[in-house]
Image 1 (cartoon, rainbow, N blue to C red):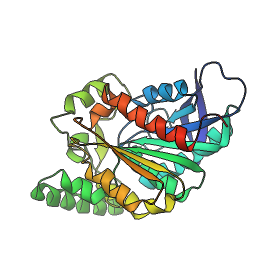
Image 2 (cartoon, rainbow, N blue to C red):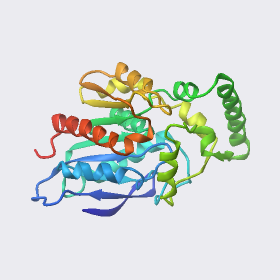
Image 3 (cartoon, helix red, strand yellow):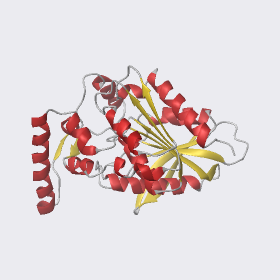
Length: 295
């Protein structure tokens, strides 16, 4: 069952959905907060994961960050540290729900959401169990890795000019999403098809994304999650977020940790079968081992 909810982060109203398992007996359950990626929204991809968690007995919650989807705030900004605060506010709200055991809240993030949940897990002890799927560990490494060298230096020059623009006239230049988040041929059609069916999907984003991405590197602090558990799931043929990102996060993390590498899939394929089923099987095994749905 799904019910819409509202809560607040930094004074802005954020909107989400709480998903509850069928036939709950009244006891409080473990819950998982689901976090979308770079330009995602709560109704894109995440409801399928919420339903899989419900089937396993967990309460699940999706939500839109500030300025995204149905939530209030300045539109379409990345604001990675603001997203961290949104996730922390969402954890507080989720813990207040009558179906939820506030001491058993986990995090699940996909793509840039994988970076966000890693950071939150490192700074907030309430995150009892974390799953990062095709996440990003170092923004500069990721953005440079998927570009030719001259493209990377051109992007840095554009970012510098935009930084000066923001400081002098107070606004960033908006560009096509694909100029910052480079589409890979392998999975571009999967992403385009999903976005065509979602009216909240965004096609233009500010150039400040470049500075934001370079300045947010979860591998700096992923070791602080220990002794709480974190699982990294990646794919061996991801050409948008290379598997090196999850591998480096895993290398910097401390136990308990696990790295799962799915074979033969690209980035956006993790949202569709058969890869989606493999992602959720690994994630549910991790949650069941370290944060059971029922006490």
